[in-house]
Image (tube, helix red, strand yellow):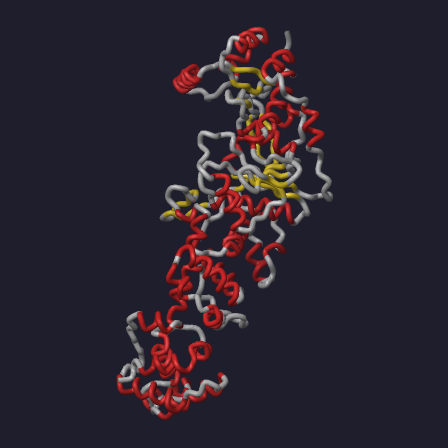
Length: 549
């Protein structure tokens, strides 16, 4: 009796691995093309760090005419959450991180290298496990959980490295005949990899982000097939990345310590290993201390947070590229209107220690991104967001023609308005432009420099009865405000007032402030001429007369 007999007993139905090598051939891609993947587990919400890794992986593939795919790693089915896979797919779709291949629903996929869900690839992993068993590079382990716990306790008491290795690898020395008999008698077992590594030896590895790293060799006999027949992450990802012809594995640096094991598995299976790039986690400043963004503590850790707040996907991606490569900010400064797709991302320019997440900077980036949108796009996005999260905003925007005029104020100029950072800002920023909302809100008029009631009344009365003409161009409009200021005894020009402040009570800018506050209830607004043009004569007169006593 030999290893092949044992392998046949355990996996009698498994195909020869040549079948899969032929089914999933090397990809026909241009030289230098990168094949990357994002491979989340459906065990909770999508973390911003997962989105970050996906964006980096997608960009690398796209800029080299390669392939980017989505693989669902669901071998840990006890921890899988309801709708976890759908949530992952939805998140990547919402952020327009488009895949070339991979899962498109819980059961469907696109691409020739599928299925792209590990629980659907069980027979493939078993075929390669059988291959290792036949060569004596794997073996069945019959240790119970109780025995493993006792072993760990002994290791802890003795203060030695925990794990299943060396003298602690109890089932490693079981003969083929013993193992065969135990399986026939119905004993439960797992399949372990038989490591040839030694912990006192070192391996050298060049990470695409971290650079040169030294590790001890792996000597752990890890589980590769669990008792339910499904693989562990370590084994499955090696098989998948080989058969899906992944060239670059982009993943979080919590996996860095697994590199020796993964390289060893690739070697023992006779595969060429991909290049690894371990991304440092996104960090947060917490009272002067840097820590990882936490799923428990930080709402911004969940990608759903950005949708709820109404921060556009474009802005989030722009910001993530900002923290991905230090060169992005200079590129953006030199290419203000270019699409981020044109930015050339470099792995060796990524932070080794972890980029600091700054919500204030993200919102600043978002203001710039939104400032470049057309009024139509702002309207559509605000309506869509309002329908789900703010019914008052949704109702307010029902008059599309008027709302487009409101949102078009100071848009499309050389210096467009940057007052909206997220769709949840829209209502507060424009509600004064809607008469029903404006008059329903109790206005607290603070007219600042000119605060005499008679003067305020006279300015407003003179303006609507003498100086206002809805057909005036901007220069004529402002000249008339200067005429009004002069008639009231205020300085026609600010510089005149500054040259001789004793001669005037105030200046034309203060008169404009009275008009602005009477019109909007606010001291700071976009261009008043444009506001008046959108409000129209009836609304302007109604607003001014509501103040005049």
